[in-house]
Each structure stands twice: as structure tokens, then as C-alpha cells.
Length: 82
Ligand SMILES: [Zn+2]
Image 1 (tube, protein in one colour):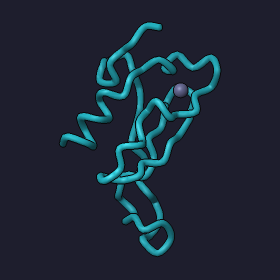
Image 2 (image 1 turned 90 degrees about the vertical axis):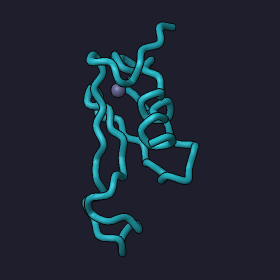
Image 3 (image 1 turned 120 degrees about the vertical axis):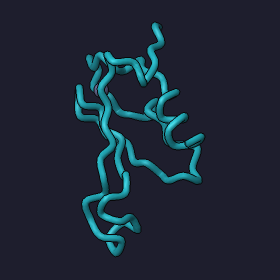
Image 4 (image 1 turned 60 degrees about the vertical axis):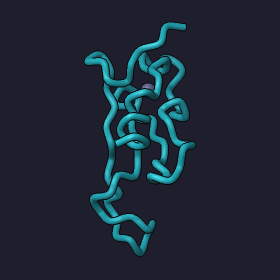
């Protein structure tokens, strides 16, 4: 298995904001809610700054997604140490 950095130019992920008011999901409309793989569209819920459980390793990628092996270093740096 070849590990690639999440921050490398060859990888494509995006943060998707909630899009719904706090009364729906507890998040403001512009707060990050989903981490999405732009290759296959897989999404994983971002649990918030206190959670250490959400990483891109949890993304339910399609079987043939080219980004399945991307590690979560970028995510950790951004959400856990930022
Ligand atoms: Zn994917």
C-alpha cells in the first residue's frame, strides 16, 4: 500500500458546510459538516473539534477510487492541531 499525503497536489478532497440551520443538526449553515472525496463523492461526517474519531480513513470510497489510500495527515493537522 502506497501512502500519500492528504495535502499533496494530486489529492482532491473538500469540506462541505452544513447547509442547514443549527436547529437541524446543531451546526451553523457555514460550519464544516462533511469531508467529501471529490473523486468518488464519498462523504464522512465531521464530528467536531473535540472528536478524534473522524478521519478520511473512514471515507466509504468506491472500490475503484484512486484516493482510497490517502492518509489523514492533512485532516489531523487542520482539525486537531490547527
Ligand atoms: Zn474516493
